[in-house]
Image 1 (tube, rainbow, N blue to C red):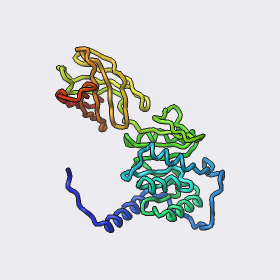
Image 2: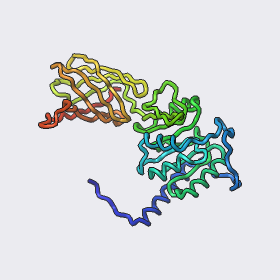
Image 3: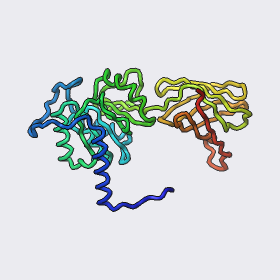
Image 4: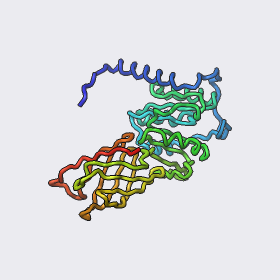
Length: 297
């Protein structure tokens, strides 16, 4: 356990405000233009690429729940509209949130809603183009864009930190299948988790009963995997290989015809984990075998 410093409540609040202010200052594309405080958005009004339609509250709540938004998250809402999603992320889930809105009047309106909701210490609305804004530090992304815009963003999304969660109202991501489909009445939403990029060849050490490092070969299409493992000159197919964020898991049958399950954490070009005990073995668990791997270039 690491040591921690206890900061008084008032000081923590000040530090939080300073941190959020500095973060917004670094990421903000430009400041708001002077706007009319009486301005209100009209349903269906056109914008740069999409028209504005508010997301129903029930769908907002369900999408944020599926994305498991919590106090440790930084949520970026791409196409913030009236700010409802960013506000809900802060009020209901305690997260920090940043909304990106291209329409300056709508961005200013959303910021006023943030202040009225009493969450200005955790939420900011930025006026800017989401295609020119750095949202790489987000742990959760929320989208309400057209599918072709989602596909334009897709290469950038796939380069984000493995485990980043993405939810989208109404529109999918082309051939990147969602991990989960959300339905609320007639409304639909989608959920993805950014997978680690594991395609290629790896050397694994620590597998029991082996004389040499094993060679793991993986092919990948988004979160779908296939592959094989070669141990001491014997090749075996992988069963149910999966990647969940940075967690890699696969099964194979060893030379003794026993099914082995390997669970690994991906960290760039390194792997570390262990072999899971057989299902149902609650007492006298077998010796733990630590497995480590490195990517072959």
